[in-house]
Image (cartoon, rainbow, N blue to C red; front, side, top):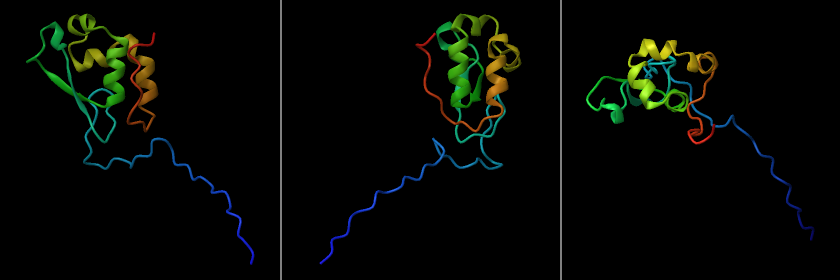
Length: 114
């Protein structure tokens, strides 16, 4: 009787993380204007700076994280309290050029790293 030797399994790798392409009715990010799977509400004037009941905009997770990574709450409240001002922020220009070409849905939280 011959025993079969198990063959090593080949791993099939999908792009990480694999996500379906958003359809035409998908939500759009208010900053990068990409169609994404989900958005979160960003207070244009941070709650800590008195903007609890102020205007908000829906941002994708990479944009929301990057806004808080590159701009302080004080700067957001005083200088970047509109979507147009956020889009024009010098600190975000390199990021915005990059993210508009990407299909990323999530990025790691980089707040502690400088």
